[in-house]
Image (cartoon, rainbow, N blue to C red; front, top):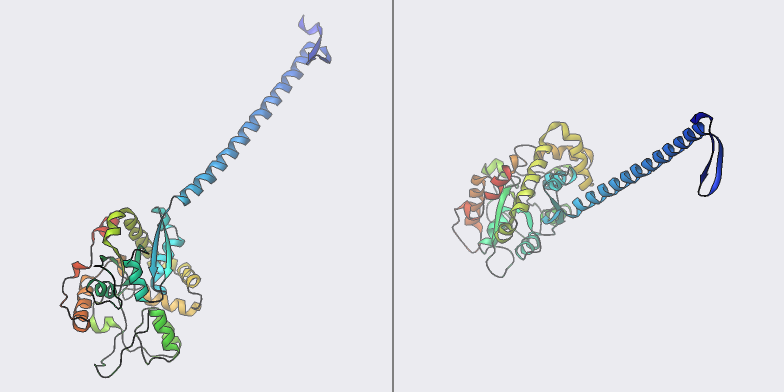
Amino acid sequence: MVANMRIDIRWGGDNVARGDAVGQCKSREQEMIQRSVRRVTRIVALSFLALAALTGVTGRTVAQNLEPISVIVFPGGFNWPIWVAQAKGYFAAGGIEVKLTPTPSSVFQLTSLIEGKFDIGATAIDNVIAYMEGQGEASVSGQPDLFAFMGGDSGLLSRNGLNKGDYNVVRAGGVLARWEALKERKHDGTMLLAPFDVLAKANGLNILQYALDVYGQYQGIVGATRRSWAAQNPKKLEAYIRGYREGLAWLFDPKNKEEAIAIFRRNLPQFSDELAGQSYGVLVSPRGFAPEGALSIEGVRRVLALRSEYGEPKRTLNDPMLYYDPRYYEAAKR
C-alpha cells in the first residue's frame, strides 16, 4: 500500500520532491547518512587536531619544565660525556637542562662557583682543595663549602725529573690559555690536560711525561659544587651524575665511536677528523676518563701529598674525605 502512495516532501516550507514514497525515503535516508558521516568525519578531524595541539603543548611543557643546571667548565675534550648526555637526551630524561659555560681561568671558575654564580664546576680537585685550605690563587670572603661529588679524568703532565731551580713557574691561566701561550712560544713548557696533548704532538711539540706514569693514581678533573647547593638540590645533582654516567657509558661503547667523534668535532671544530680520532684513543680509555665517573681516593691522596709539599701557606693535608662526599654519586647509581 505504501508503495503506491504519492506524497509531497517539503523541507523548510519548500516543495523538494514528488514521487514514489519508498524511493524518496531511501534517497532521504541516504542523504541523512551522508550528512551523519560528514559530521562524524568533522568531529574526528577536530579531535585529531586537538590531540595534535595537545601533544605539541605537552612537548613544549616538558621542555619548559626541565630544571636548569649551570655548569662552568674548562674548554676541551674532557667535557665529552657532558656533550653526549646533552645530545642523546640523558640529562633531559632526568628532568634537567645542563647549560655549559667555558671558563677563561681557574680563578674565574672557582670564585664564580664559590659565589654561587654557577651550580657545578668541572675542575681539578687540586683547585677545590686549594680554595678550601686558603691556598687558592684569589682571596674569597668566608670559608668556601666546596666538595667533589664524582670523578672525571686522571691527570696532568709531569715535569719529568726537573727539580726546583731548573725552571721558573709563572701563572698562565686555564688549560686553553696555557696551550695558546705555549703555541705562541711565551713559555718553554706547560701542563696540559688531554686532548690538548694530542694538539701539542700534532704541532711538533714533545710530551715530557704523563702524571700517571710518575705518580700512578692521580685524581684530575672532578665534578664539584657547594655543599649548600647540593643539600637544597639533591635530585638535580643526582640527575646530573646519572646523565653524565649514561653519557660516559655510551661513549665507551665501540659501536658509537663514529657518532661520538662527530659530537666531539661539533664542539671542537678546530680538531680534524684525525686528531678527533686520536683524542678518542686517549680519552676513551682507562688512562683517560674515570670508569663510570668514579673518584679515586688514592688519586686524591696523591694530590694532597703534592699540595702539602708545594702549597702556600704550608699545611699538612691527608684526609680525602674532607673534600669528597660520595652520597650523591651512590644515590645516582641506584
